[in-house]
Length: 326
Image (cartoon, rainbow, N blue to C red; front, side, top):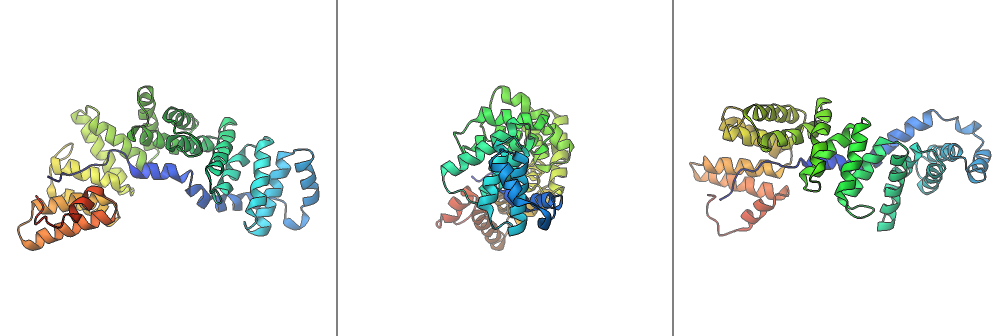
């Protein structure tokens, strides 16, 4: 019999972790613009002298200035040369350019060796104290990109970046543990990181914190706090939080039982493209069905959940012999 489902690992937390390996590319143009505004105007920049200092003296600052000039002059088109220059700047000790080089390399990687090269740049930046690079490298280690999958290393990197004040790393600590990648001592590092990021109004962190409050031997007070955190994260656009609050509301856990409110929360998540929201709404509609039209609407929601990637919904939708949802 189909059952209501909550979200035990906040996908958006993982998507935002992924942002440090995919969305960083989208952020790069803003970074480049900020950099080039502070550079010497193109007409007065002695590129020959910079090239000499970069290649002969291994001057990382000169390599970096030349790279940003190339990006500015070519409007980002000559990324191969710019990437090589930033890579050289990174290796010469201008560590903030390690992350910049990684951003540009992300645009062109095709092989495992390419991803390993990006991981190496993040590692260099991280070892030099760049918290954002540590977060990105943590995602690589958690998901086996650019090297073997290593949960312990991922947790250590996220924890290091979180301690340095990078709130995305604090939130990502929760998603690593939720995915079952980290156990044991890692658990002790997760809760403080989530608390820190949630306090800064990170909806993914608040959602993952609420999951722990709800499921890890929750007391009545913890259930109430979980519901409050889900509510806040839902309002901030974290649709997984809407679903989880809907399940709590449907069951009367931490909040008064209210089927109508639960359906509203599922609808919100479903409308925003979250398959489990459509699935839960289909179950709620099916249980309350009184007419053939009600049953038809529930089946349509199952199909919609399938199109949004919900596997159980696809199995149910594919069963053409099923005449009614239980």
